[in-house]
Length: 400
Image (tube, rainbow, N blue to C red; front, side, top):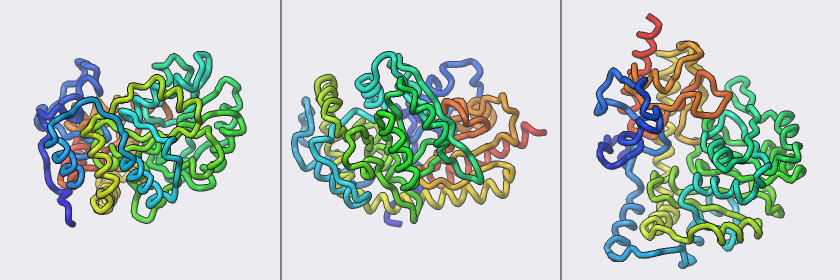
């Protein structure tokens, strides 16, 4: 490979959430966290960033912009940024949108917190599918709106939408918004063309606006394709699309996301209320990623594909009762280990204490995820194997 994804990079003392900020996020300072491993020996496999350097084009662009030496108030005025992102969505997803519909946010999460309040009246409800990325719940309840959940169905290694249940809940006149995830986090499903059409029609027929979180759309398994939901409903202004370079190019710390809002009233509300400031280094980094990051991304996906195959084979050999299917997308593995641990076990705490592996367990995905752990596979293979070795050892000791 042209890029070295096997390189082990020490991120300690760089203010990285994965290693320097895990205590409060995962354990809230709880005394129950008392690992058998020293801090310097913990293996982070939890937060969704990568243990790889960003593309050389991104590093070079940031370096060149830094040489200018002035980092004052900035916003995206140069049309080259929007054109770079438009070129990306056209090339990869055959999707075009009006450039004026694109706004930027300091991240998809901040965008969710704002959009829920802009779309939903205080007595209205937000519908999500579970298991779910926790911030869908937090953005709803943090905005004092009511959360409604629809459980995904699991059958033969595949998660599916329970359309009967989802339709019934969407018909509630108080449900005015759904936050949709495609590719889905944590299961990694890419929803099919037919599933997207059925989902979209249910929402639009019931006047339910859609925020489609598509942040993982670039991280597909080889041979898989992705369709933005909005591409299938070009005449509707009820779909807000959220994409970002953060997951794709490992640049979440730059805090820049692309939010496509075709609804004029919501877009004007956004422009009136959001602080119109972008980090000048973030602009340079994102534009470079979309312009020159494609080659790096192609190699990254092949490497991550290899990590998923490694995990599948490893589990088959060492934890044959674990339930796991290689996902359509993302670099996140959703693994059912309920055969090996009691149902009331705090999985995040157990593996941190007994294996020295930091990961996110079922309770961090709202509901409908009992017995599951989410493993971040965007790491050198040697690190992945080390983490899996520890996980297996901890489960062997727990059953002895």
